[in-house]
Length: 138
Ligand SMILES: [Zn+2]
Image (tube, rainbow, N blue to C red; front, side):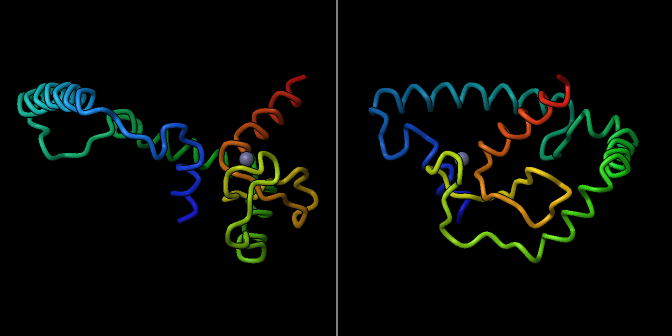
């Protein structure tokens, strides 16, 4: 539910409609693409199979990356498991930064204070994390 309204709020086109002409154009373009994709898939023998080439080729690497991240971020993992059930975002809480989108994430300013979190939306959370990475690099 929260995810849906987050999307609606963030989309400037929400609630507006395409003209019939544009709709027809979009349909035709998509049909063309679909035909191409399907013929390619039949040729490759992969029709109806979900494939993620990179993941499949690098299964071991994926697992190793995950393990490594957990090893390097033991503190974060601990904090996360600690607050996961204890701090629940109340329904219809707005993001504390943009005050537009619904809050769906919990952000830690400081991982040494596990219970000091702010409720933010996905977009602001990404921005905050990028800022944190930049600060560390400087
Ligand atoms: Zn926000």
